[in-house]
Amino acid sequence: MSPRSDVVERDLDLIEAISEAADIREARDRAHSERAVPDRMSGYLTGGSFVAALGLWLVLAPPQFIPLGMLAACIAAHVAAASIEFEIGPGTALPTTPVLFASLFLLPPQIVPLVPLAGLVIAAYAARLRDPDRRERLSVLAGSSWHAVGPAAVFAVAGVHGFTIATVGVCAAALGAQFGCDAAASWVRNCYGLELPTAKLVEALRFTFLADLTLAPIGVAAAFAAPGSAGALLFLAGPIFLLAMLQRDREHQIDRAVVLSEAFTQSADRARRDVLTGLRNRLAWEEALAHHADKPAPVGVVLADVDGLKATNDTLGHDAGDRLLVAVAAAISDATPNEGGAIAARLGGDEFGIMLPGALASRTASVADALRRILGTAYGSPGASSVGASIGYGLARSGAMLDNATQEADRGVYFDKSRKDVGRH
Image 1 (cartoon, rainbow, N blue to C red):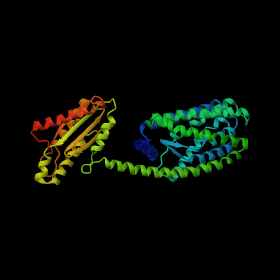
Image 2 (tube, rainbow, N blue to C red):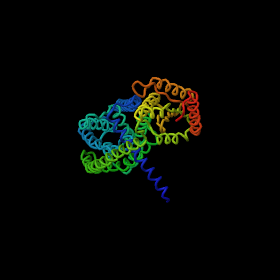
Image 3 (tube, rainbow, N blue to C red):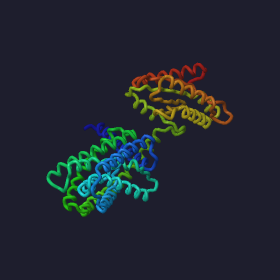
């Protein structure tokens, strides 16, 4: 492998690590803030459908007997397991599968979904006692219980009574049903509600399902070791405690990774900021050009060149020239839309630019006109005349034509200067 390929591979690994840390940081932020409207809707869809399905099942096929003591023991075990949160990309994975499969052998199938519902709610409120800023809505917690409906339905249809060789196939079918219900509810909650790319959800579910595949036999073995007894749950204490230790260590490592990621991101952002004006710099502009170069969407480009900067520096001093540049930068920033990935940058010296991904000719022209109006009311220093800049714009029908759009905008700047009889430098 060549040295160059080593560098590229390290860069890709770094980008992937930063992206993973950013996903976890965003997930933590969501846990401490109110969700967006689409996510509230996804919570209502998953949580409401779970409550409706469970209620309908209990009405149509009520259990002959509810062992309240056993139910309470299963819920307590679920609370312990649900308190162990493995952060995986956009969400968390909870090692509750052993408790679920033990519960399938200890409780009537109709009431098994109550175990994760009650367990998640109690665990969430216990977590809020430790972290008062944490937010968990009941609808989201109910939707997260969907994974138990599939296995319970499989056990109900199979009519499982005790553990036999045939039960192994039923458990395999129950685990498959768990994966299906969990994947469907997770897609609604994350891809529909939070607009997470499906590929990221698949990556997170791959880890979750592999863990569930490993943990489910532990729950089955516990039920086999103490059939029909709450003592089966005691067999889960050791694995749950071990998982808690591993989770604490992993959480510590993730905390360090998130801190390092934030420090790196801030450092990278500073390297792409113009020190004087606070706008993006030439490096950020070139990176944006490269990013959109292979995109089929149109891109608008607006360029501005400050009028009279050299004369200001010569007659009033460089401090006055700096104030002039800062005033132009403020106007550039005000004219740049806060949407669509638009960026404003100081390209060097007295040159500035605005990039408008997705903008058509009319939108690009309106931003250029808005910049002219704002500059007409801006002042570089008290008592000075209004700030002036020569402006041009161009449109790339696709990213491949960005060079042409930049040249078109540059010609517009020259034309504007010649019209005003202002020297470029």
